[in-house]
Amino acid sequence: MTNFIPFFVLVASILLLQSCQAQPTNEKSKNLLKTDSTVLSNEPIQILGTQCTIIPPDGFVRVDNFSGVKNLERLASIKVLQLDTSCQEFISGFAVEELTNQGLKIIDEEEIEHNGSRALMFLTSIEEYGITYYTKTLFCGTDDVLVTVIASYTQESLDLEEQITASMLSVKYDSNLDDRLDEASTISFDVGNDFKLVEHSSGDYLYTADGSVGKNVPSLIVLTSDNQLSLQQMGNLTENDIQRLTGTENNKITELNEVKANNLFGMELVSYAQTKNDKKQLVYNVIFFNKDGFYYLITGTTVEEFDKYLAIFRKITKTFKEK
Image (cartoon, rainbow, N blue to C red; front, side):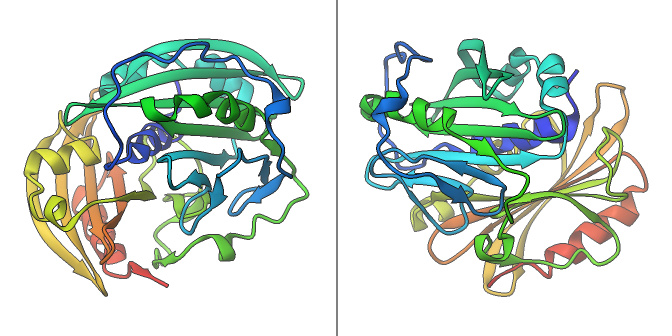
């Protein structure tokens, strides 16, 4: 069984990477893991907010609030996440099939060797509003660090797939690199003394109450979407849309409220779920939208002291702002 928090970060990141403006795709990708490093001609660059470098494909550039590179014209992206947990242990305990619980379809998976160590690459798809999106994921790293590389693209970008795969495999972790987090993030919020930072990347943060990673530890996760919603989409969001965006379709919803913080507005969703150990879990979600249609997802979870942590989550939410 995979550790809940890294798995949640993975699933949430995959879901947030699905582009709202991409075009339909009706065919499966072919030669999913086939690549050739010679298709890359650029120099390595650092992924701000991490200690990783990547050789980007042609047309892919760094953008604000995104831990990776994007091809803005082709609606394709490669995101890099870094967690202080053993890559090998994570792969050994990871079951790709668990992603199907979030509506993701598994197309292909394969264990490979990456920088001399065992790695895992797999391809998933998800359909939203009648449109299918592809996401290719790579788990790699060291005995102490898990690096997750997530590429998102559509049928119209399949001609880029070989370069995208080569770029994913070019990712290298360097413990001597400064993560340059201050340059990477354009958001800020105050957790006070209630939570301790566990991991971060550009625009993404993971906190727990005691600084450890555990299934039953109260946690707070902040994720930044690089996708935009139109004014019409934001104005027409239904409760089902909010549940889909927050991954709470199977939870018992107790509150759905409009919220504001500084120059941001959004929706607050309070729900309860059952853990695999049959424990009742409070799940607190807020989606904030900025004036340009980009959005941020705040998720707080706890299996203890529900009233206390609900108040803490709401207190932190009020401090959320863009720099």
